[in-house]
Image (cartoon, rainbow, N blue to C red; front, side, top):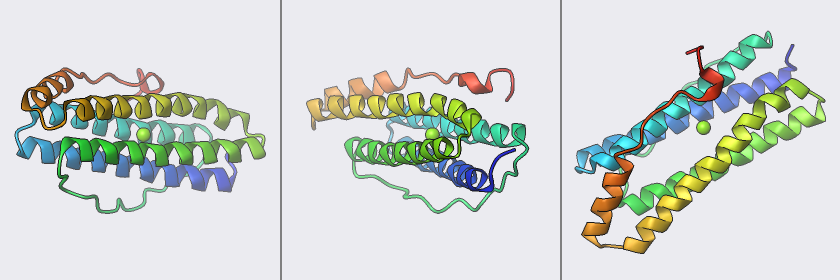
Length: 173
Ligand code: MG
């Protein structure tokens, strides 16, 4: 059985994951509307992954006999000035998510909730990847600057990203 404190914090995290998905879907829509199909593809996959993250937490709450509470999803921005601005926003947002995951981990540690710590290990590693990939794209965008050919190449590369079901949801979703 989950403690009320951990259950509540996971419910907050579930809302954060859905909000993240909403944010990235808005970015996908924005880039679709300005003809950057590769960026739109990247953000659409990112949106699916965030909804997957929410489902992983939801499954975990059920497995531990807790209660899932779905709160309203707050509004997200709808436009960004440039690909670089969107990815800077992405990195900043992922850093905030990382802090939340670490706070949840610290609570699980304080309460000697070993199972929650174990479940969170996947998210700790996932956040390292999220920050690394956003930073990598920022570096590439910074390198090419306003160069149209460079932007075109990055857009093409991001268009090749494909979706795969995260390990904790394999055979479950
Ligand atoms: Mg996430």
